[in-house]
Length: 251
Length: 256
Image 1 (spheres, rainbow over the protein chains, first blue to last red):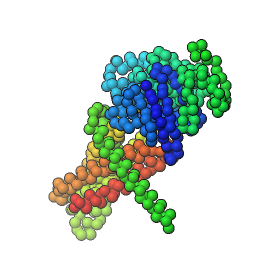
Image 2 (cartoon, chains in turn green, yellow; image 1 turned 30 degrees about the vertical axis):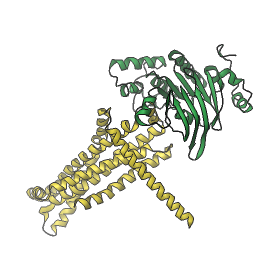
Image 3 (cartoon, each protein chain N blue to C red; image 1 turned 90 degrees about the vertical axis):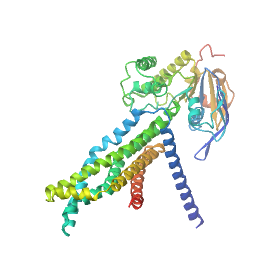
Image 4 (cartoon, rainbow over the protein chains, first blue to last red; image 1 turned 45 degrees about the vertical axis):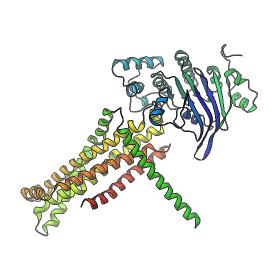
């Protein structure tokens, strides 16, 4: 569904992506890992057209989006949702209004239909009855949950997660991971997550890709990834230790 | 020497690029303004914020400006025995110059800086990116309503400024200094022409555009830090104020 071909990007004169080739499997959870400052978030933003590559192609389905703008790009973006690092909730709107925002602004929905759908999503992410609160009144974990509810409410085909557990304690991080996996399995969307949570990501991801020196150093299933013989990758992932894989992924 | 010329050249290229980007920003905002969906609620919200919420500061400034103008005018005109012309002096100063310029400067300080800060914070906290990912164009959702708010709100505030200023002048001139009420209002009626009012409206529309345009632009391209936001807000207020005064000079020279 999403395919990057030879994507290169410089930011402030510094090369960040230096020929990224990557295919994202449909309906799976793919996690992109890599050292800080390697360009993982930059890579994610290329997939939804928030950044345009200096060279290379970004394909979403059969549409090449790297040179698209305006309405044509918006048409492609309707297939996406994104959960940002800080959740990017609109701070002048309540949680309910934040989740209702895409329904009202994109689908022009009104009335009880909106209320029903928003409350359903808030319930799914564990925020039932919290709709009246404003983002400033929420904890980090609750903000991420509200962001996830807003991402899910349009029932997109693809959801991008930009470090969804940054700044959370381990228990809260685990609950966000569990929520992402549960939602992904229930709705079957294609999930692409940027994360530093090693080894936890090996327990929840179908596929793992590592960005190193501006290129994809390795992309493999979570199980295969952990068995790689590449010393640099082994060093990187062993810092966080290993994790027992679910039966379906082991071997 | 070569270095100095090189730096000067880089500075000039930078300024030209910035001006080009500002112009494209404005054209893009107008292009998105005329495309559906039209968010009437957003326009009204901005008109309320820029217009209604600036009423207090505009009335206060206008009242005291009119009063001090009458005070200064009275003692100057009395030397020539022309106190009866006080009304026309106050009204013409207000309608032609002080109303549009001071009201626009007040809006810049109150609403313009807030616009830059609001959009800038949205940029820093990725709220603008979030709009993009929802296929909602930020120019259409955020900038276009503010542009309309400025274009409609500032002329209305200028009209209010003129009226309050003239009444402020009357309070000091007629009630305190004893100028004949009839002379104050009659001299105004005979001196103020349609082209004065027309000029004031033209200036207020132009200044409204400048405030919204510059303040939205500076907020939209805020650098990703608290310091960047502070700098953007300062630059927005300074640049808007300077452009208002420069534009005022050129419009006056054309209109006179």
